[in-house]
Length: 483
Image (cartoon, rainbow, N blue to C red; front, side, top):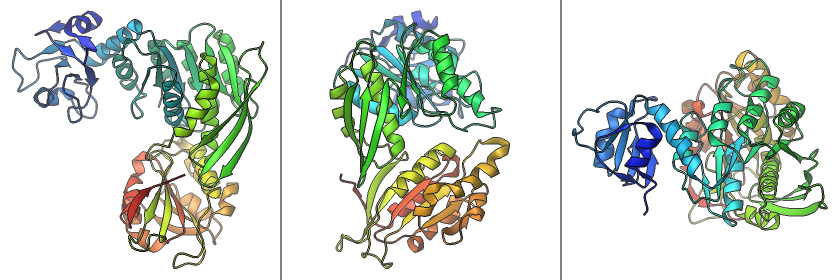
């Protein structure tokens, strides 16, 4: 494998001091999972990465980026010594961006960032070499790390940009030097750090500060704060591409639910001189919100000159990430394999917009009657607290009980002190169990679920709803969902 970084190039980018020459084929911040030949970056986060330099080198790291001599490391070990590791990683990311020919797409939004990123990874892969962020590496170290990992000969790069507080998006967008920007959605998320949803919209629009003049800004046209996004795009000289039911350039025509998947029809009108181009694509999930993400991905591909028809066909290969709407079948009896139910694992994150979308998805999903202890298959939601919502958190949780999809669900079980507000507000016939935390709820799974059911698990990451997902999986043997 050819070198991604030579010691000389990395030292030139960061201004650091070398203890020995080296060549690295990748960049890593985790000593446990790094590939042999990687440059290990000793960041200070929850733990000080300097404590793991010795083990990283023992595991095959080519070198380490450090700000001091780590304990247990030989003085002649291959190191790049800098004053500040975080600043050096940013400089490495800037150098990686500068030397690459890739057209870089930046994605932000309250919900849908990772799904849209993965859709773009798939639709662009058929039309060039794609580099994309891993997992949800979208913060102050995730964005420069993604750029530092970017091959110089990549054709496209897809960068996810997130935020928790005001002022975080713009510097990351400028670092990435964007050829296209996407804002998937704006919702009441991180309200503990913002005064209003309008303030969140303004922060999301800050991604446009990194967008090249005249480049496409792909914006959700269906949300209340769309005018804020469109005004910011005009102020930055962007080429506006609105998507959604109100989208002029990417118009969502209809979404048809077919079993565990959806068929989407849309029109793309990406250049003034061309006629609208009808497109159809299929997604392996019944979630309408995924249709919007898919439409955004097609709009980006088309705006960058990729073939929209080929991109639409390739979208059918996308499947949701584990913890982000992935669906699987749990078989309760390996002999009587008809005794099964479906699990929708959406346990990675939660906010009012994403929970509403997940409830819609559950309501659109069909259980199976006549195969379990209970004659009728049920739609069941297990919902954990939505965190970081600020002073309105109780009202925002309670409001979920009035969501229209609730009428189509059979039971809603709630986890956490905040979600108790929703539980109290639910119609009595829909109200299931409430537990203080996921540890208390997990042992209840064998009593709450039955063959024929379809169950959604969703909550903020801090609620550890994955513990409930694990308990559900242990009820049987998971089989990949076939569509």
